[in-house]
Amino acid sequence: MPHVEHRPQCFRKTGENMLESGLWNTIQKNLGKTPGLHMERIENVIGIGTPDVNLCYKGREAWVELKLLREFPKRPTTTIKIPHFKAEQLYYLQQRTKAGGRAWLFVQVQGEGYFLFHPDQAAQIFRGELTQEDWWMEAHKAWSGRCLWGEWLGLVSGGIYG
Image 1 (tube, one colour):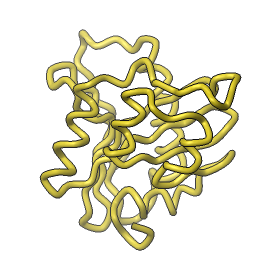
Image 2: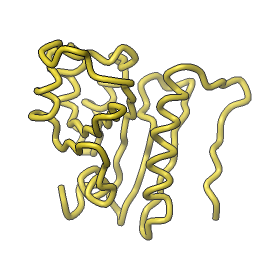
Image 3: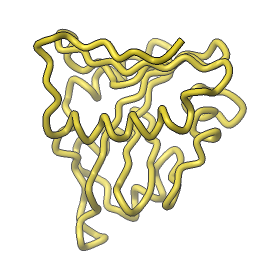
Image 4: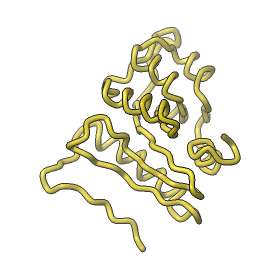
């Protein structure tokens, strides 16, 4: 059955949502036909903080908050804070993980790479404590240039790579 994106009539994509939908499209393109995987983009205008993606891969469920940055700051020593990463989003990731679930922050920095962060690391990002170098060192996993999607799926779902 083809993927159908359900969205309330009143919801309009703007700014950050358009950027994140581009990252979602990339994930769909690379993993959408993976056997044993069910993924869904969540666009919830009622439940503030609910992550952008829910997936289940071979019986392992995960929630993923998507963020996209156009670039890193010019100086590598400048700390990075994602302007549209909200406290409610961090709280959801932390609470889901505390309850034994899998929840992640996944960030694409255009022209640089992809970064997967556990909620503890996401808290540091929320507070703007990490520099570009820290992102490469502290991420649960970082991919320079292109993401290895099979590896990403394994890590996010807690499968063979996790």
